Length: 197
Ligand SMILES: [Zn+2]
Image 1 (tube, rainbow, N blue to C red):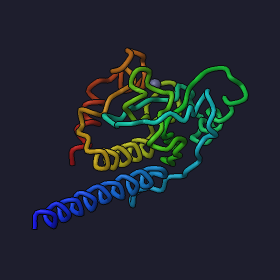
Image 2: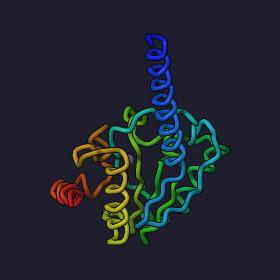
Image 3: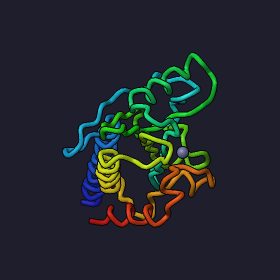
């Protein structure tokens, strides 16, 4: 009788462990190509290389960091290609998980279980989003703003984040990035408040 009890307990442990394992694998695969119902995201992963996609594991996600490209008029595709070409040019180390273009288009460059080179000492626990902008003010177009809103809302759901986990590059290093939201902190607060509903 005693042996049977131990056997049943062992079976239960095995079932629980394998359930956890499949849950992990499922989620793991799920975040490779991040998709949401509301947004069409193009998946153009960079080649693994030391300058823009180091291939290091992003083990936990505690936040999302918003950036601007500081390159007025450039498209999401231009910026993605710039990251990709760093593998040959070796001029700097930079990249981002997502880039949002002036027309609101979204390109995912790096799987969400790998780190990007965007946010300095927060690279190892955050997802980064670069936003394109039409001019030197750094202000996003309505289309970029709306895509950013939707993408972050989805990421908040996927990774159980709240609006205070959404930060600017400025909040990490004091860099003027994203320029418009650093210059006008009330616009940033307004953006964060819009993530609640
Ligand atoms: Zn930045």
